[in-house]
Length: 81
Image (tube, rainbow, N blue to C red; front, side, top):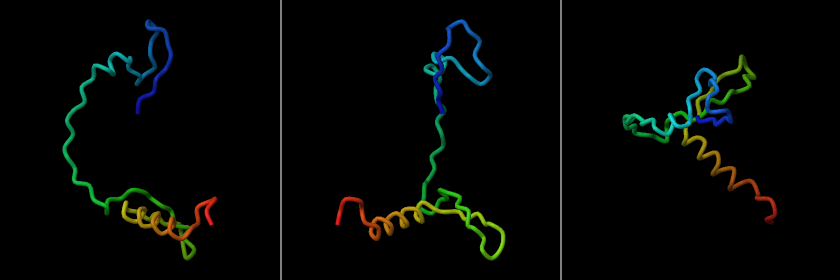
């Protein structure tokens, strides 16, 4: 995450903030490749826990994609008959 702030060039920056010039000169390390899968976790959904305490449910990318497909097929779009 990059956050830009307006400040005089000679002013001290807060801890953890780096000058813009330093950001531009920074060389990103090469990250290892990762084989992504539709079954990878994408979201932690909390279930209400009707029969007991609330539970965290891991939703995969495939779960979310399927849910969107079903919703867009069954819920009418506003302005259309």
